Image 1 (cartoon, rainbow, N blue to C red):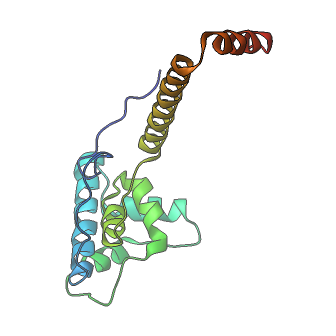
Image 2 (cartoon, rainbow, N blue to C red):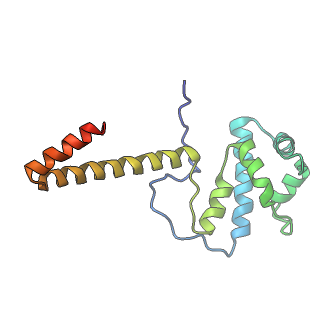
Length: 162
């Protein structure tokens, strides 16, 4: 049985109107706050403390060792020179199931983050709308054709197996 998609309140709705881009001054602070919030939610919702998050991130990306001390440092307001590395973001998102950092970065670049399932649904809806427009256009053309031409077109379509 297919798993029912869970709505993440931190994830924007596919059909929400775009917001103006995030202002860049103070962006580093917003990123740090989002990281702190991501780790807090992971602890409360999934029971993952920073030790567990760091260990799982290191397991997912063996080329990048992540420790609890590093996560603490990335979150510390006093450690402005320590930035969460972009290459660690995919592992963090997979471990915590929380894309708020990716969403924040995308919004700062005037883009949107859309989960794969929502993108596939959007594409499916676009195809269905195109099919509907094609059917409507075919019907309009059939109505505009003289009866003899329409009968000939229907015979040809039947002969070709369409």
